[in-house]
Image 1 (tube, rainbow, N blue to C red):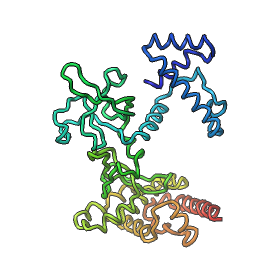
Image 2 (image 1 turned 180 degrees about the vertical axis):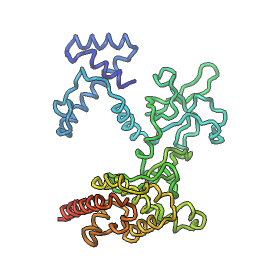
Image 3 (image 1 turned 60 degrees about the vertical axis):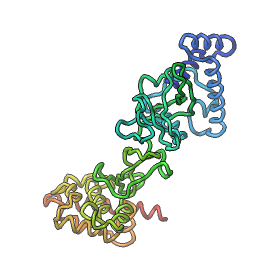
Image 4 (image 1 turned 30 degrees about the horizontal axis):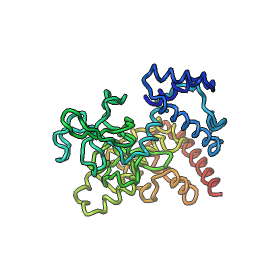
Length: 360
């Protein structure tokens, strides 16, 4: 990849300086078919970025932020680092995302585009795009790419013009929902999807559900984005389509999923030992089985408006420190009742203390 070539170029010179470094770098370019002037410009840009890192990010850590210089012996980026760098590139080129011409999904103006052609997500681009034959990405033909610019070349054989993407970077469509969240490039559906399942996001302290997610002017479907479930469900259930979706979406769905993850120990670490004391798996809560203990638990949470750890701590601290204890009893096996009681009281006390510290 280009990143590895840049790193290898710096390593070839060993940071020796002077004529010896120049000669070593020239030889490296000649042996590997690289453009010497371009590599020299990249090296200068890297040095400039290192100086900026030292000036503006002195506490970031790393060689550049500490010394303002390059480390010629820097190892190649690991797979995770390479993915993060590609995400950073894609985030600045969201208008220049292209997809390999998807069979059967082409707009009328792109009928007849060869398999090697790409369609730009920007619907104003009415011509197919191609990867230059000399590009290292050409033989791989990734399905999704981003590019820096377009150069139009004329074929010698028939005089037709071909639009060629420059500085192409392969990307993963899994990244797009996060990279362009909130922009007009992405359109979100209004209804929670059945799969993937809703999940509790600890960093956001929220039950999140997946919704249909489309990207670009052609409305390409990409891996779904996760959004707050409570707000999504309330909008869906109060819309004009209520009668049509009531069987699939219920107003208390966010509380159901919160109840399940609470009993599974995924919301509060202090309750992680509770799962082994239960007489039923918490998954029955989201299967909507009409059992009394499920209805009591979900009703208690929805009635108090509790579907987050913060809301639960606040309720315990300011209103009722015995909240949920009574409706928990039918879930616990007889042999574990005393252990569950001690675990629950300790968890409540710990979280009330935490809430008090935050407020104080």
